[in-house]
Image (cartoon, rainbow, N blue to C red):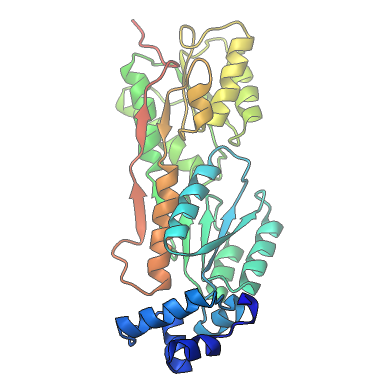
Length: 338
């Protein structure tokens, strides 16, 4: 029965015109509360289900958001997506999740598909915004919010981030205050403007402020996965002078690095202290648990969704580029030197 009921049937049952029923369906403010309730009751009693496709064409909205993620299997992103989804449910939006595997062609395909689906907006997570991607965003002419990334100096798109340079500074300064002066770093990609470059800058700045000479040979480039943390740590352990502490630019790499240390018969933190970054659950439950910089991943997703809804509804946005607070968590992997 419900599939054959039309809005015309609802209007007749409620004793109102078709135009009034349509305005109630689209939540138009011109309908008084008594009439609105009358129509809503009729919809409920008749088990009326609006045709979402036809309605979206009429009101030029699909109540759908595109979410583009570099790698959903990464420990970092699920909590961000959870924040997006919970917030989207509050605003009655659906999400279409696109996984790109950091592949530029996949990213283009995802944007093409989202354009065809006529999504109302896009949340773009973590990956660097290429010129092609920025052009596509502009062509689509819909609101876009970046999460854990930014478009550099251009600042064309709103963003939700943390201060990566300050967060890295706090991590390394913490190690210095524990008495460490021989501190290596396993960084992200050297050409990554979002997390790679600023975290290295924070590392160097903290060393300088603690009167420790910066040696670029003490920085080993990784790519945020377990293997790069493991392999780079093996290289560090081959140094003539093994560092007393290592700052690792992601918790996942920190776990890989810790595995290498333990396999070599060394102890954490008695022989080497490890400081991670991101605050993923795996770092907490690794043994020994890894001290880290926590990014508010759930909040990043929820705040980004809230900002996107404001942009879609053309509300005033006071702050386009939101920088959320990070937090340093002390666990078992760092030792104070005598």
